[in-house]
Amino acid sequence: MKYDFDQIIDRNNTNALKRDGWREYIFHAGPDKKFAFADDEFIHMWVADMEFRCADEIIDAIHKRVDHGIFGYTTVYNDDYPNAFAAWCKRRYDWEFNKEDLCYSPGIIPALYELVGDICENDDDKVLFQTPSYGFFKHASTYNGKEMVFNKMKWNDGLWEMDFDDLAEKAADPKVKVLVFCNPQNPTGRVWTEEELKKVAEIVEKNDLYIISDEIHCDMRRSGVGHIPMGKIMKDYPKLVTSMSASKCFNMAGLQLSNIIIRDPKLRQKFIDGDKLVGFLNPISITAMQAAYEHGEDWLNQMNDYVEENFKYIKKFFDEKLPEVKFEIPDSTYLAWVNFGKVLPEGTDVNDFFANKAGVLIEGDDALFVDNAKGFVRLNLAMPKSQIEIAMDRMYDAIEAAGGRK
Image 1 (cartoon, helix red, strand yellow):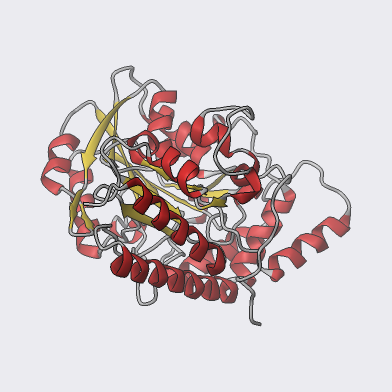
Image 2: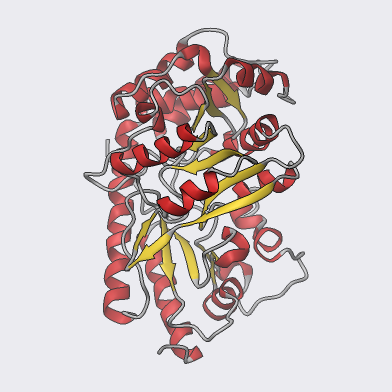
């Protein structure tokens, strides 16, 4: 069937973080904080949460489960869900994992909080990750009281690359116990090549590190781009943890279920023992995720095609109207990582600027992306193109009015 990604859905007053919680999340402010735009005038291009209606096949499966009428204590007791996820991995990435390694978590974030604490047992243990970085890599480290070590990526004319010499040097620190890795990388959208993954694997294995590979964005890719799970590269390495979920790519983050594949049996048992939910899961979540893996691929492919056109639109817009803005279409994610450093006055708070001057809510800079992100903004393009067109025109007008172009 043909899915409608142009539909504009009113999400206000649905307790959605994206619509009802942005003041606190982005600006750490309450309802009294005023802006130049009314709340219903904002275009929300911030948190990684789509504006697209979920696939009908998933909604139908949820309706059927709701009609059953009982929602008691639930977990995974048969092979239906793990078989659906395993078949997805085999079909999409030609990758197989040991099902006994599969654990569950409400999300990759809470799993990361638990895993960092489980792995870094000593007070002076350190966590290594690459920057710019998804903010919760930092939060998981600070939550557990662990020092962070940054491997700054290099930006070469729009292409983000790993600094392998720096990674090797920092991984050799005996206090570093784990590399928190992101593939595809958030926020840059890089899908790492086989050669790059092998170099990372070599450094990790040489230093006997744990590696947590966050692969939640792996099903949102541009046409012709494939995903290689780190599990295919590190086929027998026991200290690999792989994190995946249907939540991002099918717009089900609020249902909260993620797949955490932990090879090390001791770490796996420690993770299970530390589960604050003692293994219980949401019955609706299991139903929805299984339906996504079994029946959602056509919706996913159409969504990826639609978002790719959105990327082409903003690329053309920047090239023609704001060539000083540095942006290249990323390999993956529905998030554009854009360098506005040359078109805004020095010292501009990009989040405040675009909110007050353009009525567009975004996330950017080092405060939200940890390090190595100055001047960059992350734009969520998983929304109807008509909304993106309005947002881009507003941002352009705001930049022109500010006189920051060089």
